Length: 263
Image 1 (cartoon, helix red, strand yellow):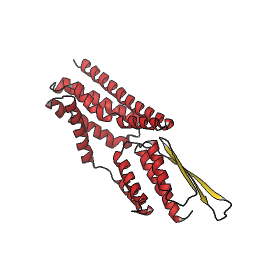
Image 2 (cartoon, one colour):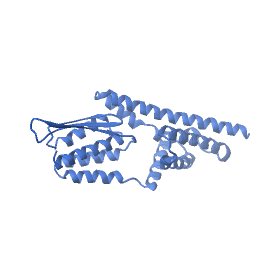
Image 3 (tube, one colour):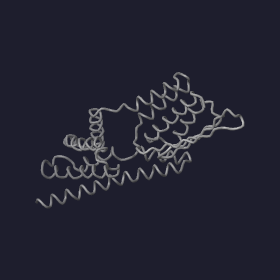
Image 4 (spheres, helix red, strand yellow):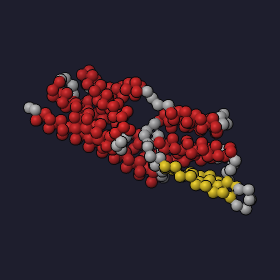
């Protein structure tokens, strides 16, 4: 395998890994990897994607024409989270590479560069507040609901930025986060001010957390015949939704106990 083919293989590997980490559909991952590999001089190249891994099988001719070198790459992906921006940028880079506007080395550099880029804490905070306030408006909330929604937005940002430090999996983080939200808001309603709709604020806070995109991608995988990946993604989405419901129930039960204890 010459240097150019190795670079193309590295590019396909990197693009596939980013797409899986960004919760792209299985058929989209396989299509992108195959497109990139088609630019190589390999005799055979194919890819298979699952919800947590990527398998690339290649075959290249050796110096002995009667033999060929076969290689299978197995890439395990542990951390997955919806990132539509990453999926879009991978497709942009891939499209430019397929049109020969950039080389494989340039494409690899672009993918590695935007992988490092992250939204700032300020941007995350503003986005979370804006999203929660939009849901408050959709649910016909009052101005008081908009003001109180700043509190759960701060709590969500805290847990989102600190999840790596807790050393817990995503299920546990979601339970802790929603339990904190559901515990604090009833206490504010009872002890501080009742001038807001508790149900609307809790619902508006939970809406951005539910895995709507992940569940939609699971359905898309089902429709494309990728039942194993679709089933895995659907189970992931259901478990994520259950973690949010469980945390909310725990928080409401604890807050009710505290209120009854001190009244």
